[in-house]
Length: 90
Image (cartoon, rainbow, N blue to C red; front, top):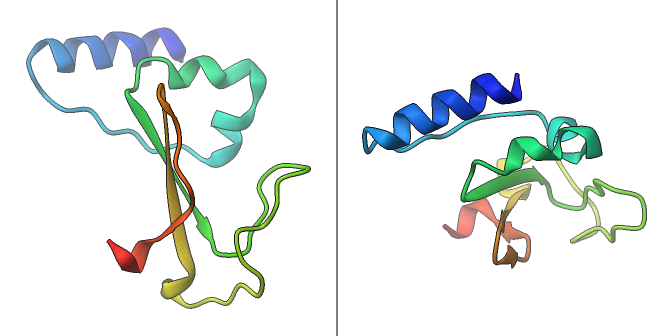
């Protein structure tokens, strides 16, 4: 899978095309699959406000609801990780 993704990304970027991919959070969190992040400049993570993704990670806010206003995102890049930001603020 990784080799196929890498070839596809290299071919697309070689033609000057932008590349976007979607994967479930466990794919990127699994230490054996973290190599899938390498070809990308950044990974945009999304979740509901108040959710906790990893053990020891603090929730970004209390009391999540099902409203789309509760969706938050952050960008994980080679430079670091941004704070969780409400989608509605963008």
